[in-house]
Length: 187
Image (cartoon, rainbow, N blue to C red):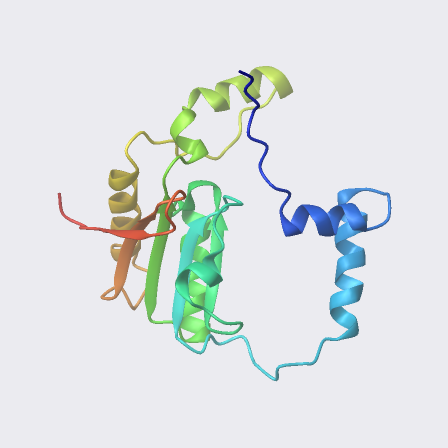
């Protein structure tokens, strides 16, 4: 009896990247943009999201937010970072989104098996040893994704800069099933 390791099928994205000219990944992305631009038509939108919603989510490559949330181009503002953590820069973006561009709702999307669950704030110390300077930013690592969503919701709801904090909801996206699980803001 022999066994063989399961090799996942090559994704469409991997096939597209391979089919492009040799060069760096960025060269291939620029080439893909040229192809995209060749058929591009200005949709005639402005920067104000049609649904008046801002989505704050993790930068994880497994999250296709538009498909997962049924969104179309122009529906929302999307703010992404490691962990989907509400940092000062996220508050900055949300403030501009609400005060200058008309959003009123905020959806926070964290996810299962996030890379930040495997890090600690020691990451900053390691960087300091490596490069000779400690980063000014916090890693914002966490062990409990539900509690991290609650913390992020609280940061949005208590920001003095955000006028619209009554429709703020947080979720955990399951990367294995694609389903959202809503997090109760109160434990």
